[in-house]
Image (cartoon, rainbow, N blue to C red):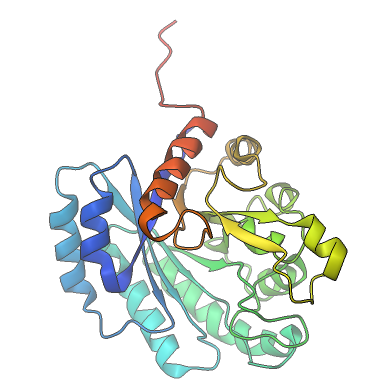
Length: 290
């Protein structure tokens, strides 16, 4: 059994500043993320910079993420191919993205285009020894009117994995994105155990009083994105099922969302999540010579 490593996410546009800071602490892995556009990033040069920053630290970059709409936007699709083609320069084994959508159309309407695009992308990733994963974020969309990611709920996942059944294609799972839909996340660790290929470390606090007063379409916020250890989930249970399922990837903490531990308190929240997740996984590995 491989011990699950705990990392954090650096924003692609700020990778030098953030990695230089994060490497000082006990994070074991890193993910580099971009939203919609790469902003002219030269991945070959970035990889050299990252190698220098992480030199002799024993820490690795496991994942690159470009969260975009490759079904409708040709430049997004070409940039995603560019990320897949160059992930090996970072030593990464995983590429994260959105499933895309036909904006404003129902989830089902996107499936033919999804099959066309992601069948090729999954093969492209497999040929390079990579896993290709879909973050389960609704991005403000719904079943009847998707925005840029149809991969936000189990019904959609079933359609996706029926269309693209490749073993290296799966989910970048995060419980928060289920909780904002009032979906119970824990059963998914059993049902989709072979498709959960990467994990974002983020949690949520659900305000049941706000729901009772105004429902989920009223003016009140009813769910807050939180760092692990500050939200509603018991991550000891999450680790139990991950280990039981044979998950050998990492968990990358996704910061910059918590409404309390933010700005000057951001690193405090990050390190709390890091220490909490290390505790939940069972501490440091110690071989048993018994």
